[in-house]
Figure 1: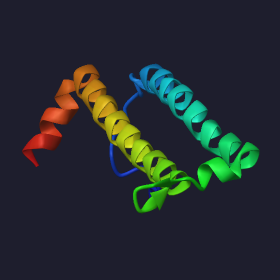
Figure 2: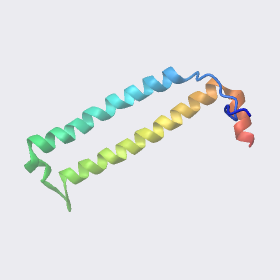
Figure 3: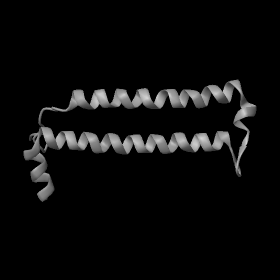
Length: 97
């Protein structure tokens, strides 16, 4: 009885691209998130300032959540395109199924 993988796993050709892209997005997201944390710690009264019906803390917090989702979608799209570019034969078979 063979307990190996049921599919033929190929070599990951786009690993370095994914790592580099992940680090770039980490470098984009981290300062924005750290700004939120530092402003909350250093000046909570500023974060409580009203902007319309909400305060800055809530608006900034939702911005961070939406930014994380957008970065995740962009990462997924760019990495999928890179994988298709690096191994078009495999993805042609997957598209037909």
